[in-house]
Amino acid sequence: MKKIILLITYVFLFINILPSTLAAQGIVSISASGIKFLTGGIGIEEVQAMRAIASQFSLNLIFSEGEGGRITGLNAVIFNEQGESVFNIKGAYPLLYVDLPSGKYRIIANYNGAKQGYVFDLVTGENKKLILNWKETE
Image (cartoon, rainbow, N blue to C red; front, side):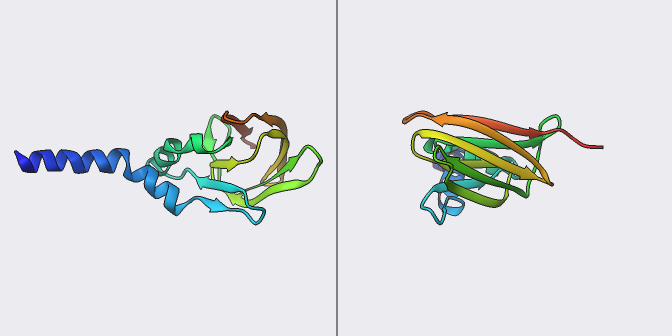
């Protein structure tokens, strides 16, 4: 009976706690300008781990192509209201979480030479989710 309880405990820890701990320790980075960010989203385990800590970031970006296919190798720059670059990333994965202070921002994202821009506001204590989708080209 003890072995079964121990096994159940390990399974619970592995499924519920370990993924978010690994994501928080292994992927979270700090940009040159001091902005906390996380990029990933390759594989089910990584997506689950990232979703578990998404609320720790003020901005959650999802990059996709066509009918929801996730893309990698995307470049993005986020500008503040004064037009100053506050965050820059090259080679982002399908999920990009960025922790910016409240304010008005503009993102310019480039995927295979096709650019998209979006203006958004961040409010203290809230989590903003944006999806940037590139239509499939033939």
